[in-house]
Image (cartoon, rainbow, N blue to C red):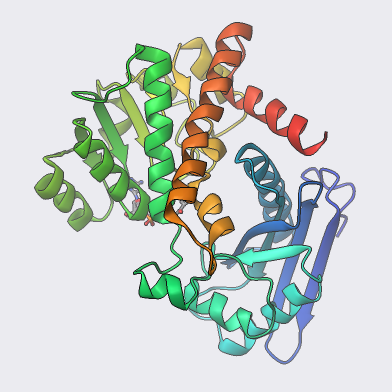
Length: 349
Ligand code: NAD
């Protein structure tokens, strides 16, 4: 399998493959860039159809982490790992421990964290094999009621980002009466709904999981809407907080919101959709900038965790977005492209 000539290869510093015969582990770790610090990124376990698909994913995701960390103002690089297998059927303690030893073999250049298919329990198992595990709550954090789940910080970061976008588009700093449609009210979207409702916004919500919708209706006075309509509602802000590729050829022409700002990763189906949003005069908060609260939280996790420090850092998400919006307006170029150039200036300087 070629790596250096792979279409997703982007000067990655290190790509390591591991097969562990005893546990059956097949995994890849990609370290994209460590110019700013050791590479932090989640470990995804997924039943990839082929080794090639797993390589494509890990190359793409690790690169994204470099950009995310750079614009989050963290002294960290970008990396990611993938385990080839179905987390529901193939995951065993021995396999996860073997993954921990694989992480350890990189000597700290890669710091592992949770991602789809892995959880806090897996991170604890890996921590028995390596100290290079991020986002694990220690005894003090657990006693304070924090589990190491980054979702609350992600939701707060998205809330701060929405305020920055509202300031840029409507020139106002309060959210009273702002109309927001949220697609997906799970760990992040549900908490975001709470912050928005507390700030006086009016909410429209949808989710595959009906109880999550009902909770928002009950607790925040939200309006429940069908899944296929949420992106096309006549609202001020559309907040995608479920899955990726939601901004595409079909949905963009149907958007009525002036702002798209939400937690979901990889919201643009293709890079060209960044331009499509600009042409429609819709302000898009680049996903990896607005949803960086999670890695900011993971960075501070540990015995010295201090909520006020984390909150101060989360506020910087709003400042960064403000700068991106200004550049975008001045140069009439899409926000995603501006964000990428700004990130590159940070990690290539
Ligand atoms: P989650 O699984 O807790 O919530 C997602 C919700 O979306 C679920 O309730 C699910 O039922 C719903 N959903 C799925 N498909 C849907 C659809 N087609 N229409 C409507 N609802 C649908 O996940 P989460 O942790 O809240 O993360 C949400 C998004 O934010 C994901 O894209 C994730 O990658 C991204 N993200 C999360 C974090 C974090 O800290 N949790 C950090 C950065 C980015």
